[in-house]
Length: 336
Length: 271
Image (cartoon, rainbow over all chains, first blue to last red):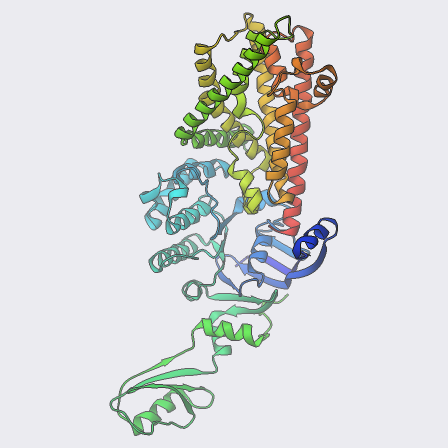
């Protein structure tokens, strides 16, 4: 599989101006402005191969959008290099633009006052999409996203869910190789989210479109991304499979037991009781100390149970652990 | 290689969509027409009173003046910063203009096309109705020679081009000021005055008219309307049109520089 995105030691530093407070301060601001340098992205390196879906995760202000902007040619890196499809996005802006699709969840790319269809027709002109391809795509996207319901409606009258669907379809009309999605499900309800995810999956599977998405919705990550890249405080923290991340961090698991009756002493060796409500008890245990099988066996020997289940901590917890503990995980597998 | 006309086609489509966009606001247009007509009445009454108070020869007779202001109100929305502020101008203000860089289009040409689409709309839905309606109520002069009508058409087209370039240049400063309102206000007053929209240059005191002649803005109003009224004739028409052409190119270039600087600031400093 060939490499589509190649990011090496990418850094971006912003000047942030210091504003003095108060009436006199605002006058002083007119004449001299102090600034400090803020590192938004520091020495980030990764590559993405054709057909991958990569979740680019991090807390607010971690540098996700800044990276995405450098990948789409909207920002010039302070140092390091980026190539997308072999183009340097900020130097070969138009060439790069023809082969990528971009959706920023917070802002629409469509023409606010125009019906969706007319926006699409403009895009057909902009990207010089042949008539046959255009019709084929519109038909296909309509089938997957039910665009027909609002195809003639001006964009300003669309609901958020409809607008996202229209924006996604618009970003894919010209058959781009790479799709950049910045929080594509932000603010959407469960049904709309599921629909968008399914669409992304299908497009990725059928067209081998490489997808890089940032999100705060960890369901997005679980449903879509095999691979995740975690950044925090401008630096790369983790690059690898979601399952690996989970394995690395999930030293602990949860065992939830529904007992047949209320027992007076329900302590089990090597497991810590964390919660009890009537007959339902939750234990925390570490698979390194006691295997799940051994633990269940120990419980069954002493008590009668109705139900039992093992849970892994959800990735929200995992990621929080990474951020809060400031863990520097294993260096990314494909470090240059 | 794809044929070149296709590129042009894109921007034509932009202009057409911009025209359609404006068509949605019919009530606003009707309100605008009423306002145009109201201000026209005020201007005409004021000048009629002036002329009645001071009989005698004037550089422009009352008929000329009435025609001049009918033209002013007709073409008002085509003057710099008078039309509705475009989405594009607002996108600069809120930084979302960066998204435009993800599309393979030339930004200035795109904006120009958008403004020209709007200009066509104003020409058809504001200029024409205002002119026709006013002709019913006032004695409006129509040029007798087809040549001077032709010259007026050329000069007015250039005026609209220049107006569009100025609009783009002024709104383009929002890259730095975040909100162009202040600069728009200043530019608006200077342009409205020096274009001759309030008082035709012919009625200005000599020294001021001289300054007005050096400035580019008379090319927006005073030049095309003076050609219409037959106050500029013969070789002077060519000179006047040449002047408009030079200033159009000038503002186009300035606009390009401002937008390029703005974008390079944006891509280095972020939105």
